[in-house]
Image (cartoon, rainbow, N blue to C red; front, side, top):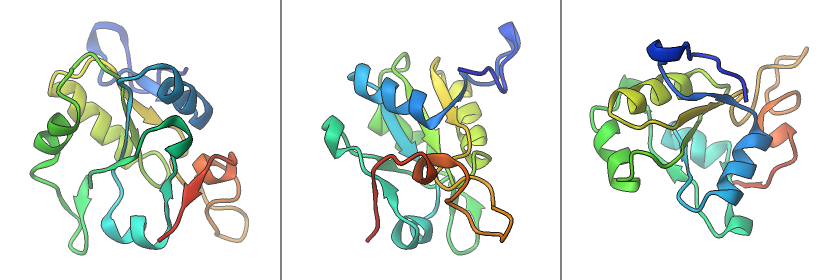
Length: 148
């Protein structure tokens, strides 16, 4: 695990983890929750992680709302409803690992002590041709996912 946005007593969230570390945490910690903070359009057209092998489901909670991309004013209430235990792992995922940092920071400010950001997100950064999903992130790592 890398520490990313953390710095001792001034930690802004628990840290950055790889997709493989996220999978292991979800597998080994019964209360661990994966929260996908992308938009409903991204979930529908790009896909969602598939956690069925672990007996879990990804929890979609948008950080920003499509189509105006305004910050979701109910975000903290929604994640709190999903996971009331503030010491349980909250793992945040977005497209490339940017919105999920903001989500992890917000969860930490709301009292969650183990809010993590998944490095490279669901699709990772763009490749040489400008396409995502081939060079990093959940999809490129070969983890299961599904599309509607």
